[in-house]
Image 1 (cartoon, rainbow, N blue to C red):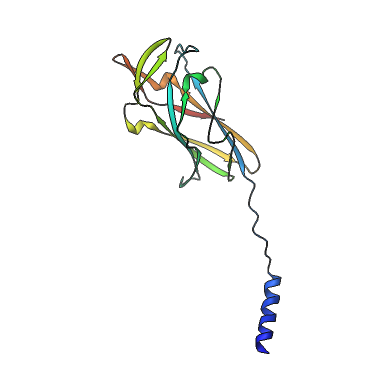
Image 2 (cartoon, rainbow, N blue to C red):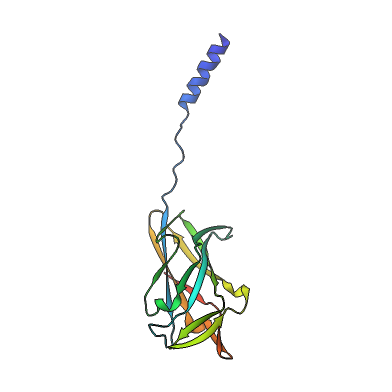
Length: 179
């Protein structure tokens, strides 16, 4: 009899519990594009600067312990293609769904193996002079809001990034973010 009473009371207790899961926030929507500025460089429509953007990661919070990959596809981009306000999409998807919150840094890794760049119609050997220069950290505060789309534009500064040294160019990748 005690067993029946205990089972009955336990059953009533379990039925009274709220079985609903906690509500998750709607994601935020992030679109990251790339463009190039050249200032005084004479970049022709047929010029090329091929760079592999190995990944782009967005770091969350002040501590920057949590990060999310925006792009991890090792995609080759002709950075000169995006000159004059033209943009291209960076990312595994055109729009990335992310948890809403405060993001503080974008990290981009650019790989450039000994290659030839065409600038003003002339060919130049170009390389990144040190492995440590492949990773670019861009500190930028963005508050990704629930259910809203945020667009970030990654701007490659060709003028600041290229240094002529003994007939070849060294690439010191320089990026900034515009919103």
